Image (cartoon, rainbow, N blue to C red; front, side, top):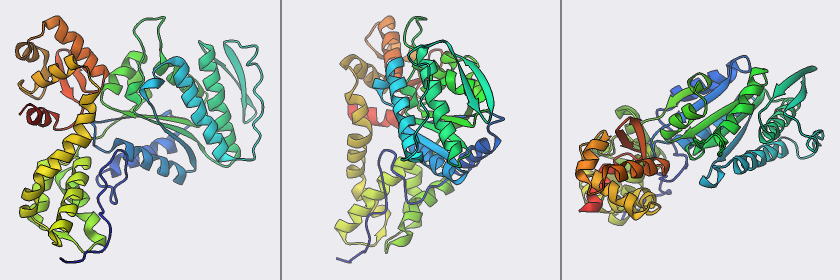
Length: 392
């Protein structure tokens, strides 16, 4: 067996940076331009895409770029438990506190007066200018104070501003009831109010395509508040680079035919490229070969799809109810894309009313997203292929 030095250079995982990031130069340029235009222009961006396209990795790249432009990044991943007003305020407040501590372990922030005697407005002083900002709730006011204090300290420490980068933001959404929970509006309102006062504050929300609809419901003018950045699969040449470049520092190489076959098979999705590469690397180790070939891929394919299903698809199915899983299984028999509710009614034994309820629950669970009335799509790429394999 030949000895090949070096570790496996492929990194399939959630939010794990690949050794070579391909095809994301354009969104990085637009993010940099957004920071340069602040605070005169609002520095808000909405990053959406299917699972496995590298949104979380891109968000980390944004954080690094922010530092290069002397902006202080505050990066966090939201959880389902944050989908209430109180939980979101607590989570973002903790993130901002951590950011302030990072900015200066020795700094003593000025005490914020008025928490004991709350009102619906407050007076903030920045660069000797007093800003009167009104808010609709105590939590909005608390969050605004935390945001302002963080920006204030960042400026004192020589930064140009603060940018909040929140991943999995589709998990936070407003309830339709006026008296219900409205965590997304609670987040947006103080950010926008402080931006209108030209504080150097940015907000990047990253998540599944359902994030766009959630923002629209929270703020009807959200398309003007957020620059839209849709992240998809890589173009063929970009995908080839993403697959081949990690081998550059190793003794292994790949046949050109094999590389093109992998890119075509995974349709350019970044996570899949890393997974295919990782499994081929391990297979080459076992076979004692130094070159990836079509023959090696053919022999490894069952292991690749087994790992793909276990690591990528099955965890998303496992959290669904039996009824939701049944409806997804029925969707495999429907024409796609898109998934039409009319086709699903014919394929499923459930009543149309039950189908509509389950479709709404699958959207809330992040398994589907709504394209338009009566039309849906899966949030994970090649998910229908998985459902067909699972049914078989």
